[in-house]
Length: 307
Image (tube, rainbow, N blue to C red; front, side):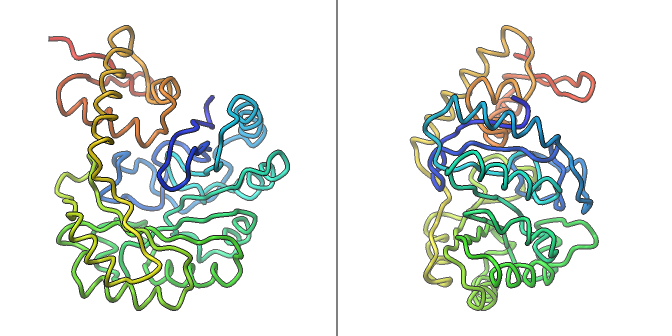
């Protein structure tokens, strides 16, 4: 399948069947902490990046194949609200299943009325807001030059007024950038007037685009959680079981690409992983010198590094 992946286990969403609505790394931001690497197409242009009929066809086939799906999640390789197929996809899902629909978005386009309208049929929307300060927004999220953090905040407030579903907000904190008590209090002051159902704190605990991005400790995240107050939870995983699972995935990937070169989609789909998770593990294996990638056409193919 080209546009549908999973289902993959998610701490927040149970077994999540993913739908990719934009090409790899098509986004409005180029966040320093992104696990997918640098944004290759930074844009604000909304258009039908993927074919609606093929995406719906893949979804139908996936739902027949996988009985255990807790959420259908629009996320993946870039910013899903850039797709003008967003509303049509959600409506199509609602016609074929009662499985709830979640949208993972960076929240940069919620100031647009057309985007807000298309999201109204979703059951859960999870936007991001890492800061309320423009200087920090520019430093950590590296936005398209026409975007401002004040637009994002206004968009969140406007969306909450019209959206009756669940609205969770993710904040990713990076050491020394947006984690000061003063900044966290500023974030709290802004969020207190929005009416969120949940605030989720994260930190870059896995390999990211900018290696200077350092994570907070669990204790530091807890301090930030206490400043933000309810409803807030820490979702960053420092669990040793996660590390063991990733070691197992590394071994499986090395075994697969020792036979023949494979691209990201082939690796992720073969192992039932989402693209984000597969990219993280592949980046780590390249850093360790266990695999290497070569570009063929528009795709990168991975193979075991030969001595």
